[in-house]
Each structure stands twice: as structure tokens, then as C-alpha cells.
Image (cartoon, rainbow, N blue to C red):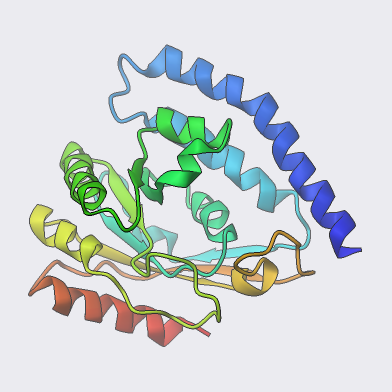
Length: 235
């Protein structure tokens, strides 16, 4: 039964992507000359991604603390990472941000192409030149007025437990003077574990946005402070 439901879900992802990608291209063509941060295209992408949890009764999503991301303010958004579903549920925030994502995702037909149009930031893990380029592009993005969304753990947790954080997100916050917003995700690890594509039944999913943290101290200190705040909420 799980396999059948999973086939239906992923089939819907493929079909909807075929239908919605041309709409994204049209929005890009119409807005790219005057919407320098591509806010409208990103909002459409939020709608596109949100369809997969809105229409799936197995994944009821509760979002709290959204008000901690104030309109017109730039942030480094830092979330724990449990599952591929984390990306979908974070789009449910409907806030202006650019993803920092591994380069392989940009190669996925339609979805990856849309990420490129949005000017999301790619990272080739394990390659120092790519890390340097990512940090440069992320800093430029913050300075232009768009927030960035990062997973400081760098990869999805196999066990569901919070992993060690890398300092890149916090170096960016200190370099640009923008606050860090910790975001706690729950429930996605059980709904769709790492290395799996089979939906695991009904699971309640939560996204809890914590209060912004001012960029003070060293990157290591800021990193540990934010990780501790997320760790207090992780279940």
C-alpha cells in the first residue's frame, strides 16, 4: 500500500512539474527586468512546492513563529535537516529567500531548472572552490536584500538526531551583520527517511521559527548558540 501511494505521489510531482514549469518560465520572462530579486518567481515556487503537502493528507503541516521573519528584513535562515521533505515544508513559509543547495539538485529536470531561474545558490560539496564561490554569492545575495536559507548540518540526518553544525552560515551573518533565524523542523524524518522514496504513512510535521539571533561574537560562538536553541526544540 505504501508503495502504491508513493508511486501516486511521485507521479503527481512529475506531472505537476511538467505543467507548472512553463508558468515559471513565463513569470521569469515577464518580471526579470524589473523584479531584480525575482521575488514573484520565488513566491510562485513556494506555491508549487507547497502543493505537495497541501494536497497530501499524510503530511499535515503546522507552522508556528512565522512572525519572527519580518517583511523587509534580511536574515540567514538556519534549519535542521531531517528529510527531503524539509525543502517542501520550508517553502510553506512563503518568505523571500534564496536556497543554498547541493549542485546535484540543479540538474533535476524542470525542478532544478526552476532553481537556476530563481538564482538559488549551488554548492558542490567537498570542493573548496565551490565553497568559496557559494560564500561569495550568498554574501552578495544578503547584501542585495534577499535572505538565504541554509542547512548548517550540511546533509540530512540518518538517525533524526541533530548533527554538528558547519560555521558557513554564521560567518555570512557576521560578515553582513544580518540576524540568524533558527528554524526547527520535526516529523519529516519519519515521513520520508534519508535514502528512501517510499512514504511512511501519516506523520504530523512541524516547522517552528524561533526569534532572530543577533550576529555577535565569533562564528563558532554564534554557531553553537544557534545549534543549542534548535537542540532544545528538537524531539
